Length: 187
Image (tube, rainbow, N blue to C red):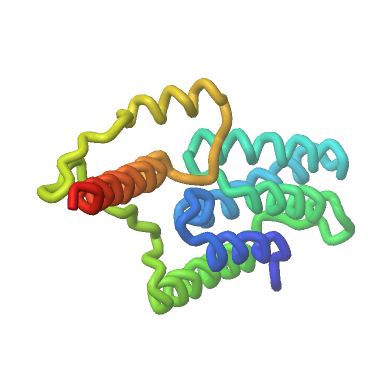
């Protein structure tokens, strides 16, 4: 009745709740869609190695297309593909306990994170473009972040809006420090 890949989902939900990979849709969609894909691969192909490989590959594609990328979903696909080719020959009725596990985890994650002060689903900090005290316009544009990420051709485990908020907060702190240092040196 316990689905082992959800241990990895729990690490994401409870340890890094702001991660785009740990949000409710990636957890629910990533785990459940991948489980269905893994079961289908196992039931159609019947060979453990081929079913596992095809199930995980297809699950990654499905998660990417549906914008619910969740790494433990790959493990759900693997588990279900192997279960469907094993001695018990899992079928789609196994989606019931898997769904119960996933939905219970999301509910507990929601209660825990919100109780401990981590809004979940994650709500990003507002990014003030200019403030009254520090009208510093910034040394970069959001498009600069997008270009760098495109140049790097990497997927980072942070939302671009959160990254922008961090950079803007750092710029505000630096501007405040410079203003304070200038006022001290002019005294």
